[in-house]
Length: 115
Image (cartoon, rainbow, N blue to C red; front, side):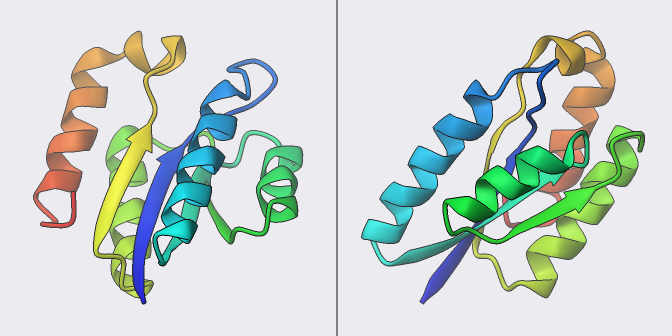
C-alpha cells in the first residue's frame, strides 16, 4: 500500500481549518487505498489528539524550530515511513510573515525528491 505524508499546522491561534481540510484529504486518500501520516508542529497536544481520534497517525516537529530544521525533520519522517509523496497546507499568516524562510522550506523539501 502506498503512503503519503500530509504536512499541516493548526492550533487555536492559527485555527483548525487547515487540519480539518487535511483530514478530509486523508480520508479521500484512504478511500483510494493510500495510507496517510500527518506531521504537525507541536503547538498544542489537543491537535495531535484530534488527528488520532480520526484514526490517523501523527508525528510532530518542535513548534519553536526553524523552517530549516522543520524541513530536515520532515524529510527524515518522509524517509523513515517510506512515504512516496507529500502534500501540505501550511499557508497561514504566521508562516507567510516569513516568506523567504517559508520558500526555502519548500525548496529544501523538494530536493528530497518526494515533494
